[in-house]
Image 1 (cartoon, one colour):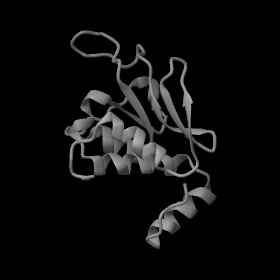
Image 2 (cartoon, helix red, strand yellow):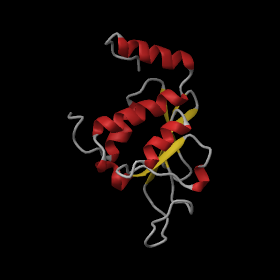
Image 3 (cartoon, one colour):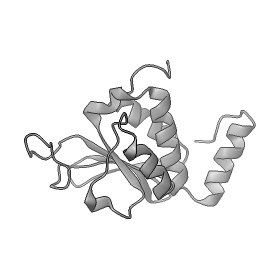
Image 4 (cartoon, helix red, strand yellow):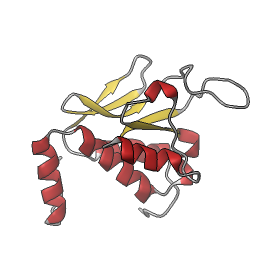
Length: 144
């Protein structure tokens, strides 16, 4: 599977499930919430009043939240005008970024893989994070 092709929603699910020690919980409306050690790292949001279409004012129906390591990483993603990632005042002080599923194709599958891996790394325990990084460094397949 090419990492240079445009990303899609199926890739989010595949990549999140491909990380070790992941559980999937149904959100309040059956939306997928991916967790590691009981901590969410990718979350398919339900439409909420903080994320609306600027032209219509309608709640965005396809927002995905990814945790990030730090505010600096968040700012790097949301301040780049070519990036589909955004935030809202509701997430001020929260280490996460949002993206509409309909805009995932603006990044590559490889870029999405980095976002998902970074989200997982930001929420996994130090032991799990260190084991995953060590396995990648050695070229071994991470345990799942």
